[in-house]
Length: 420
Ligand code: NAD
Image: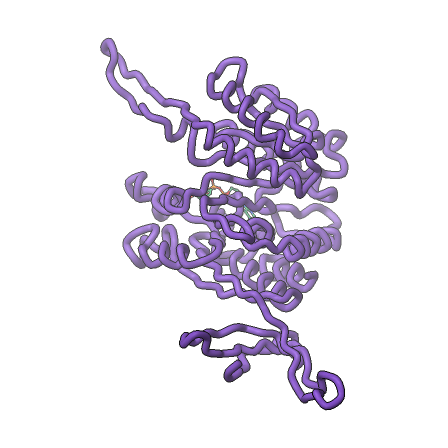
């Protein structure tokens, strides 16, 4: 080991100091953050030496892209929660912030500057806020923030799996448009949507003139390998939950549905612990409202997943509480590279007022820890902290009800960070 440099102190406790150790390995200078535990005499008898007990810390590189509207406000709280995770768990985060969306159009002339893409490529995960707003709505559609930033990011990193948990907390059921008798006790469904295939991308596609009138064509295409890889994501997610998977298709009408059902059934044989059932998409749309508690993980292709995940978000009643993950092709021993963001948008109606609900952004940090960084305990700590704070009666305006305490974005973030 070489020299040590003191780079900070967590909780104000000396024995929780983080020290940057610099050393030379095979001629190359390396550096490692370690946690200082204590100094004392270690060893036995003659071999006893005064030494410091140090604890190796994992450092994760995260690209932080707050974006527009409420994005920067809720991202500040997500960063606060990351700080609390650092204090409690043996890990540290190198957060590299970059511009994306409207703010990038204003500063850099494009929604996804090369520098931002470079920072994302250099990271283990992307923590994304949201992009867009009235200021940029008059731009040509292809230059508007969502289309010019999110779609290229999805394409560049092959983000093929979209995970959207629809969680209705037991004491927030009043916010749901569904009858209390149906959702008493809340529900927790995870929607796994294929994101890069199907009707949205299949060729041929377009509008042409046939027999003197315009004709529109969209083509639904799925290769077996695309179904296999998304099915594995869904089965693996089910393994960490209640081990029930409902696969959605339209196998009674569409050839895609036939291949989908057959392939998912085949993949399911590798996961005998997971109970698999199949539903036609029209029936699924009804059953999700009739009995959301009957579902654990729902797997769907791109178009069906788009519609059903919005339906599920709606029946939770609180958009500001819902995170989402888009997982990519790059896989490590810890998990898949991914982009983690709230399900909602930039909420221009409340931006700048300090009243947005930061929970969706904070829970997207939890998803990042679980799916990209292989840290399920830290993810769970965030989820438990959110539940505790909700149970304690704190509410932002979007989930407020009589008899609870209304707080702003920062107070909610601070309470969750303190509960970790
Ligand atoms: P939105 O999700 O921004 O807002 C819908 C409603 O939900 C609003 O009343 C808003 O105040 C509320 N809301 C959303 N998030 C909230 C939160 N965290 N706390 C409290 N209330 C919250 O959807 P919209 O109005 O259709 O879109 C606004 C802008 O966001 C548009 O420019 C759209 O293009 C963009 N958008 C971006 C993304 C993204 O970046 N992924 C997604 C959706 C919409």
